[in-house]
Image (tube, rainbow, N blue to C red; front, side, top):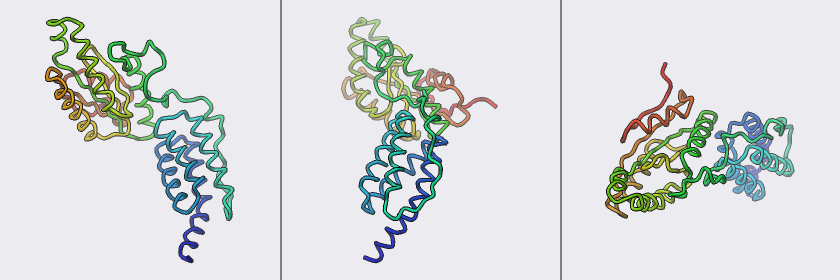
Length: 269
């Protein structure tokens, strides 16, 4: 098929440009744009019959999506570049490949999500990360958001009657409801980091999500809690970071200011 052959030739002709773009984005640690470029390459390479390149681009893309360590992302990206340079008809030159020295030390703001390995950062009542860990994650994800220019939203969901139940029926009854809520909230949050923030409050960190996604998730959580146990009524808060948000303390303060607060958090002036 002459048309397909011409399109394939054009794809191969543009490979040096793609390599240059990917190498430069990696060197500058522009992770959001790098993820986009890898995603585009993965689809194009698969479509033009380069499954090894498509698979390798997918590996690097997945590391970026899951906030993998920069050193590992750099290694997978360099393997991708090496595969591309072996394509028949590839005609360099290409941009200088990223030097590993800049990426050897993993940045603290790309620590993997999920359960902390340190037991001191686990809340025993819910088996979720505790406030200490969540504060660290909030600061880290805010840093990622600012560097990659990705949206970042913190949400809080409070079990409004939990304290009253504890005072009336005892701590055991309150702990039972708290554990039940945690088992419902955790799976609904998917890949988002969720932990216990206060005696009766959970916080969810939503990197890369818009306000509508946060509102939808909170609505789903509240609905599931009430369906499971009518006692589990809730109030919610949303804090939206913008490029003026320089520290996680302002996000924390917004979440704790009161139920149903929905504000964009930035510095004054």
